[in-house]
Length: 192
Image (cartoon, rainbow, N blue to C red; front, side, top):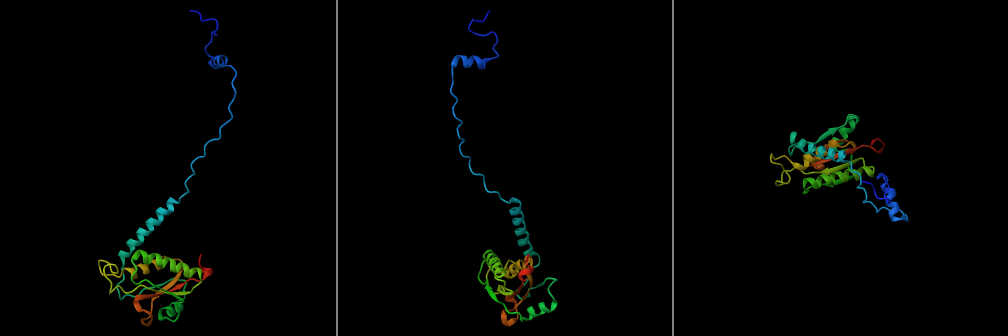
């Protein structure tokens, strides 16, 4: 069978055949692409996971060595001279600000203490007092299932974890006794 005379013998040039059949064409201008959806803000997922794990470990650490109502809070970093710590323990270093956590639920107390210490650091305070109570007069919100004071143990653990805390000790009886703690903050040049 022979191809008709208007068709070329070779079918390989379909594009040329198409152009011959259509005729002259005008090229359309390039269209602007529609805007893409904005990319999501980057998230530090590893940091978020680490923070969540640290919070969980922190909460579990509360169960390990709990303080009782009459126990004194006491902590000193090695760089703090023992004589300065002795002055803090005796109440000879006066508190410049005070935070009273009485009646606060644990989560709220944690946020309040964190904000209070950050504010004290920003204002260059050297010593603050935190009143956490002894946990004797509260109900289930203030003592755990073993009778240990929740806020007292929370304050103890939080203060030990902060790099800007040089030392802390339960206040002398006239300043709140084992229901309050005097906290010695690092001077601004040592905070990094």
